[in-house]
Image 1 (cartoon, rainbow, N blue to C red):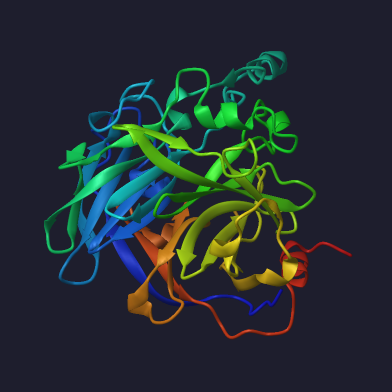
Image 2: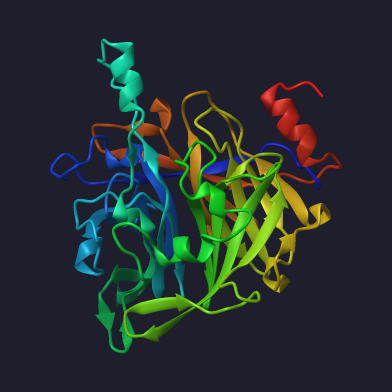
Length: 381
């Protein structure tokens, strides 16, 4: 796999939100907790992993994005945890007139309380594992073009309906399909960030949906699920059988222990944002899985088909890359990158503004992903 080195930051795009403080159950400003991004015309749709909503920004005359609209998803779909239940949205994709949305489908272990004076009580608190029912969402919402390039979500637009895969308060259809999987089944009851099951990437073309897993990582291989999903009845999506008795294809890619953080189709290729699986600091890369659209069966992908596009700028305790999308304004190969825990220098708390990066991959060299990851982590081999 080739390794062209660090990405070139061509530009920054200012994203300005409304005052977040009136929102219920939001502990941090929206611009500090961004987890997913999708471009549709002159609009950016973004998600904050604390809410059950999507945020729309539109391009303004000066090239920045603002005029923030907050859409509570319970108005468009039936959420088992209601509008106040956290969805932990980790993937967005605008495709075919729909906004596709996926939650993490993950469990969450309680943290020890910072003010806990008794070590035993803190340890006891960490026994609790929470299951948020809204996290198990996978579905799509119609996008209606209000004006040229300006889109808004709707529950229904003519014959197009909001539709989602069946899920409930304890188990989703996806979890049921994976329960007997020899690779993934054992990880369904392990919390996220402990190498448990955790969906963080989403890419869509027509009825074909790819889900990238932050975890589990299996012997250094990240996992991508590949489903053919159709609306069998109005409002209900279901994956058809595509791999024997299974309703999904399963692709394993050698990422040297990094998990999928986001994905985006680029022609026949799939661009992968990869980063640490566990709760730790580490480098992030954009990889290219060449001819991903042509893989019609499960298997381990030939490492020669995985190229390192770029290593992203890395800071300790800040600027964690969470989402990517194609950015044609930046020229061939340019990508928009959004960050969780943005560094102070890219935010303006008074105006609720954060700046995303527009990057362009540098020229290729003949080094592989192994050397880059080892060098960035300081490991000895």
